[in-house]
Length: 145
Length: 116
Image (tube, rainbow over all chains, first blue to last red; front, top):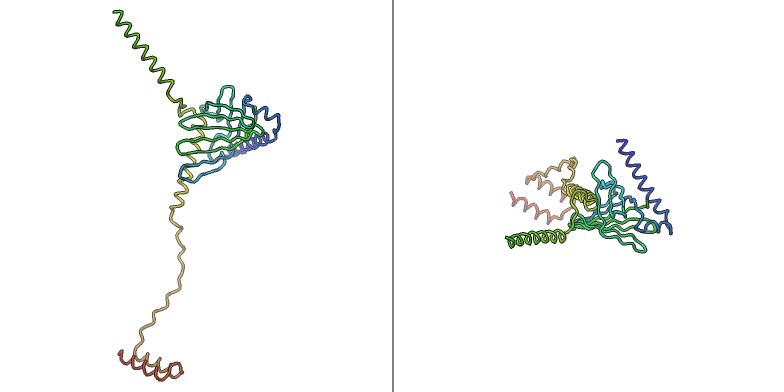
């Protein structure tokens, strides 16, 4: 139990740290690093999920038992999780677009479409996924590796 | 003999071509296992949403908490039907107190007597 709490605190702290780091790294330097070439690690923070005809639910990523970190591997065009002790899940990036303001990744899996938009200035991440009358959004922050 | 071999080769070629076309045109959905955003994320979010929805529905349909038994005051005993004698006595008191006029006294007294 203590280990679990400690792990949660550690990961929460890391998530907050990532957010702060991403926020602090504003300006030209960070914009250069969020360029669709440098790999990123992103922390999932807040989640909102909606089903057609039902009210939406929201909470923190840990409430949804989501992987707290997401790696974006631009070289291999993959998004993957970091959970240990299990088979590594990956999401192939089908489309990558780098605009002046956002790095946008898009993909399709299991009849669902997803997209990730990363603000090039501050690294804030917005992930959306839609399909099967259910849509959800995940907000978080990324930093370049 | 050569003609038959040519037909067999052609059939094989057409079969391979058909299989190739079908493979290319099939939507490239990732398998359920191993999918990250459309797999792990989606299933955990959807499961959590279903769990919360069920919990909210269960809460909405649960019976209200049992009401605490309230000690109610004992109902006042219903007034016993008055006898004609009691009615006449009451009427006399009302007349003696000046609450009713002599005409009203006579009318009421006659009504009591008629009801006997």
